[in-house]
Length: 197
Picture 1: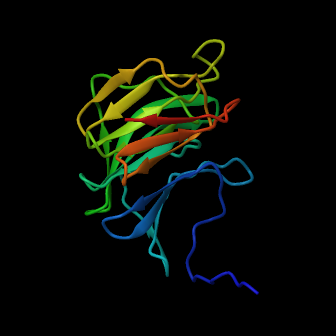
Picture 2: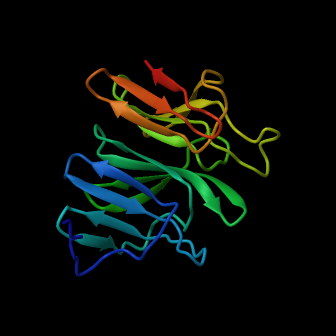
């Protein structure tokens, strides 16, 4: 019989949040999401495996859902992009420095169009974070999905490809460090597997 561990201090219940694994400190970082009453959160939590800690820094991204976040182990930063607030889609870029536990807004001259439900993962060949797909149900046309691939190196966003996997959202991406690939699977109307080499 399994028992759930009990923690004295835990984040409020939520969905549509983002979470990454901070491999430099061996802990999970959680941001945002919403509760059952559709209240959007703007809080950041870290989980060590034995305890939760809330980051109370004054500067942080606004509350949002269905954002994208990936961890850059070279720069030791979690990169957050976009998401949605109510019916509005976002295109802002934030970095969470795990060394100092601080958020910083980045303002590159070029960035991906506003979107949510996309996916991001770390590209270990180019030491950049990749973003693919997603949707902006209001502004991106019909069908309202993206099929573009972007990379973030800490300074700029670069459009890497405008085609490849067909347009989709709500898919997943992960880094295969052993083979130096980023793997994409599924999404809305998809059960295919792609690799970024």
